[in-house]
Length: 312
Image 1 (cartoon, rainbow, N blue to C red):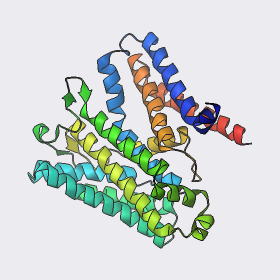
Image 2 (tube, one colour):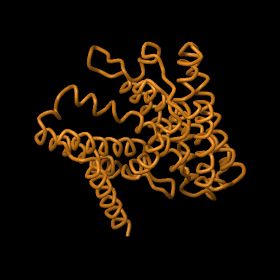
Image 3 (tube, helix red, strand yellow):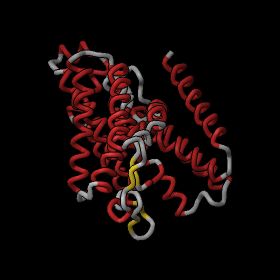
């Protein structure tokens, strides 16, 4: 039991923080611990969670995907244009959008892995590129989606209470945890992030694995996009721009190292959950958004200081 706790120490601490906050807000606000609000709590974190999982993957490899928000935003525009403007059926529209998103990730991965350009420089540039593509396609305005054509992913509730997007996220988490905790490709990405020279001596093709990493990032940006587009019934070229830094904060809060090779997908998703419960709980208590930002920033700094102290 002790060995298991040591192995999953970070995840255990984050889960404990989440439970403490859940109990606190349940007593602090009478509207918090209701079925409707609990479902809203988890459904509101879906897009951020997908972006954080994608961001965590890039950080595992020793890089960082700053274009993930731009890819997500561009995907909302593409879905809205295909379904809302062109009248395309939902399934082919989604498949084409997914293919374009993965192509964006492969382009990032090619520049980083094969051309050996710094990941932050590459994705800072492609962030502007993908945002520009979204602006050109949408002509700089919000593109509407008919509610009856795209409601499944962000507005449908099973049995009258369970949002479908929570099930989509659960599948996404399962796939991410499986890949990066149990499958060989995920373990290779960790090794590349921890020590590229050792990975090279072990016979790992670093460039091709970086390609896979950034394709994964963009695929998860797509999944976040379809939920977001469904929730707001539209697409906009900058709709997810503010989520990029939040995804980095959530991943770091969840124990993912910016230096690469350290962290877990479970920790990253728990980081999202803690940040989301603070936001939701303070909303229920009518605190200002400014105070929420201060609280989340303070929590992040405390956690980082604690981890730094433990390592030294």
